[in-house]
Length: 78
Image (cartoon, rainbow, N blue to C red; front, side, top):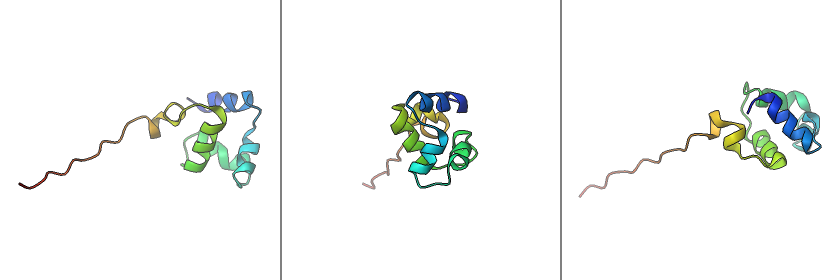
């Protein structure tokens, strides 16, 4: 999803970017906007936006959460 889609999803739930920032103890919208534009990474902001909108992180931020992490299987010496 892009910035406008995420902002719209928040607004549908009655939230502004400033409100999200204040709830997280940040300095308002100016701390949230760069995360939604993917210029800054904040798991706290990303998780809260996901909780508010009900949209999974993998759909909101597919570039960060879209690919499953493969775990390496260490070879056991016989």
